[in-house]
Image (cartoon, rainbow, N blue to C red; front, side):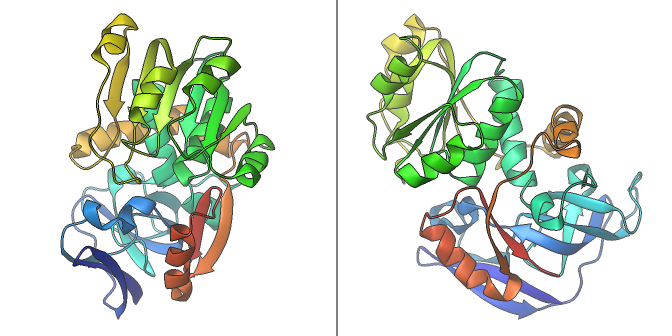
Length: 321
């Protein structure tokens, strides 16, 4: 089968096209006939990856091709989306607990844009962020795949959403799908504007998609009992100062969201929560993933270049078959 692998060496990410055998489902696994997959920035940041080579693609949507021992409730031909191992290929492996049924109203392209961005978003805004209707949500780097998912999920929950971006055009596009206030900036200079938009209160929940360069400013933008989620450091800044006076005076909560060290039970719990709380909104059309561009598997290098140009609003999808 056709596949694309990711090689990390000398601090750089390279793509390698390979013709390999169709994977075999071990106990608790599903082999998926991949129809579409999607790009995720973290997979292409060299400092996040160990030196070496591995199958590329961490999410996919398609039909069940085969199931391993102990897999129940899923049969051949079922439409499935989920976190995957080797999604940049004609066939990929999923752990059974990662399998999410694809609602009939979603295309393969839309389904492929769901798993990573919306599962991370679910973790941040539901069990950890506890975002409520009427609260203010601030999303830095709001035009990213996770950023747009946070915007859509926040609006579904009844929150008011502020987003930051260096592009006025991107903010205008996002206002068309519900962004309440856009702040045009790429730097740590938005706290005063957030306070102004919220009548001096600040944001109840903040999603930091950028990293350490804006972390102190996020703290300054939080409301009393505010919650700050950090989901990445695309700026490369992994260390910064924390204002302990603000932390305890305002009763702030700080947390990170990553699957790097989570157990299979923890991942399964997130999937169950997503299926219960958010999947119905996809099934009835209240949430539809925002797709910026679609490439083919052969065009994956061009898709990577496009992602690294930081031009997209929402997800970049790859059509496999």
